[in-house]
Length: 61
Length: 186
Image (cartoon, rainbow over the protein chains, first blue to last red):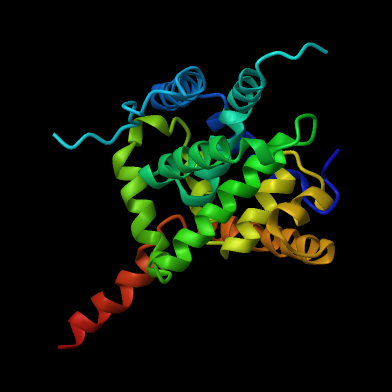
């Protein structure tokens, strides 16, 4: 129990508010971001010799 | 213990903490694009610093620390123009009305937003995110006693706020009533 100091009703409402958000599915964009980071890193490892034409996100025209 | 792709383990663990990290962000700043930005910045920071993370230690605490530091440095940069928590809140509610199934949740989030930043953070970490007082103190970079008193003050304040809003029922009237009576005097 983590209720030392945090009272019953308030604690309960706080937790259910938090849980309701936590139970929402993770937004796609975060999953995509992680994929991108992972991919960039793997490519970075295997192509250390080539000059980096892999850019994350930034493209100027 | 296989020498598997450490990045994969890192990613997997990060993913598993993401829902809680996001809940933390939303509890801190409201349901707002700012919460998403915070989570995104945290993911990128964490990824860039993953060498500094020791596998097997508490990644959740590590990520939460990054997120809250990110938030506070943003706030500092912005010179605290965000004290307008009412404005933020109206924006939140207007933006995502459908996501609030329960009025109760709205009330609660509104109350949460009225707390001073450090108190809000403290009560969320201890009361919802599942950290011990010790861990929360470490995440917030303050003494154990400080966290305890912040949690206590936060709880008292929440109690006050929630009582007041329940009794008052029509919050805005407190504001508009004096205006109305003044109008009648002219």
